[in-house]
Image 1: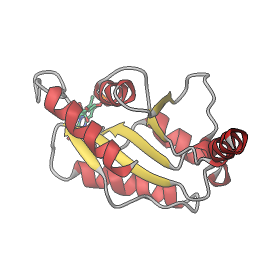
Image 2: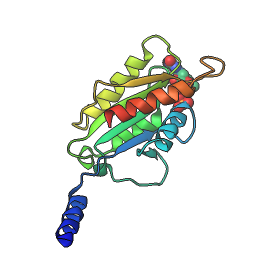
Image 3: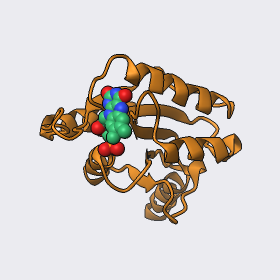
Image 4: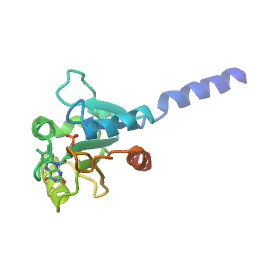
Length: 163
Ligand SMILES: Cc1cc2nc3c(=O)[nH]c(=O)nc-3n(C[C@H](O)[C@H](O)[C@H](O)COP(=O)(O)O)c2cc1C
């Protein structure tokens, strides 16, 4: 009886779905990275920094959050290059891709940037989920108290809600 129970447990462990989240940061410093690092430290999510040698298997992730600051209506150049060169077939078949943006709140530059990210994702026959998240990120003296503890917690609970 005990052996059968152990075998069942072993089988369940083998077939368990490994649902995990990948956070993608364009660089290893700055507001976007700070927030994503906080999420990584406080959840099961993995963080990958574009342009660093670490390789990750995109197929392992059903949820991907791509982060970027806004730079004059544009996404970070590392993220653009990554999205341009990446193979759409290397993602999990049921992947859900979300966007996380840090900005100072200038006009509609978040929306313009999101639209560009969406186009790049769709060029790979993938879909960008409508549900996205923004938070303020300091630029010199503007929004200088962001991202703060409340921002960190807000983004963490958002990531947990989509995972
Ligand atoms: C060159 C440059 C251009 C920027 N352009 C915008 C902009 O158009 N709209 C906006 O809201 N924020 C703008 N910002 C502010 C950044 O988006 C914001 O500080 C963001 O958190 C930067 O992310 P990072 O620290 O991860 O690079 C700009 C910042 C820089 C340095």
